[in-house]
Amino acid sequence: MTTHRVAWIGGIGSPQKIRNRLPAGCDLVGFCDIDEENLARARAEDPGILGTNDFRQVAAMSGCDTVIAFTPNETHRDIAVSCLEGGKNVFIEKPMGITLEQGREILDAERRSGKRVGVDLEFRCSRAGRLVREIIDSGELGDLLQVECDHHRGGWLNDTPQGQYRTKRGTSGLFKMEGIHMIDLMRYWAGEIERCRVFSAANALPQYEFADNCTVMIRFARGAQGRFTASHNKAAYSLGHDQQRGAAGGHIFRLAVVGTRGVVHVDFWNGFVNVLHFRAQPVGSDSLKPEFERRIDYSGLTHPAQAGHDMGRCRREFITRMAAGRPPFQPAEDAYRSEQIAFALDDCPDRDGGLIDCTSL
Image (tube, rainbow, N blue to C red; front, top):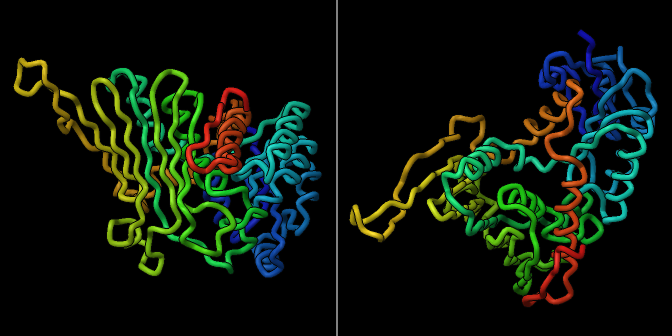
């Protein structure tokens, strides 16, 4: 069997540990890291393959099929375009670019090259994300009526590397930085977003260059409605991570999907999915009441958050599909559509209910 050859850009760590995480039939053939200490350590561990601090050498190398890149947002366009022009598939973190123009350049390079781009919108590819989609597609919930999400976490300080989580130069805002995950997941579950309104409270954290407490009301093209509330000022990050995930720390990450026949609740940090059915109460009457049906428990994973926030699973899925000659789980064009909506939410000039017509983006 022909080996699928993979190169790694960013945060190399141990080459052998990367090999251990690659799918069967794949091997690591090169790596890149601008941290000289990391690079020297990796070269010493595996001197037989390319080790460089210049991603362009990886893009140009022969004997490589797919490149996996985990690098700052402002590098995504240059790395993706170079690797595609070098005849390689490439997997990048979200966002595709700091601007929509950079994302379009990646799509153009993908079309020219005949290779494929994967974007790390891992919640769509996750265990819980796929499970809820299967439940929706099965008809168990009936016709979809509503999708809602609450994501409340702590803030990033001024010393955050590259400022990617709190500055406009690092990312365009709250939705392009993190909210894009939920925008993308809602689209995966409920279909295309037709229009939305964005509301923002005054900032509580002065180091943020964009709104850090927002709510979006959504109308999907197929008739369902949605709500997404996100903040960076409601969780105590001084607590341990296990405490953050619960109500004690205020770190909340949960969704609900409501249909005409039932409801699905997803709690990513606590690692479970609950399914409720609407049943007649009293029996035989035309009055319905939500009743617990079953729970899917992900608490046995290495970390419950892996039910949704499993970047390794998303990356492995992309490599496996590239090795088999199959298209990505999510086409880059679709990831770009979620970016368009996230950009529009961040750039909406009216933060007090401004209407965004997503069909015109």
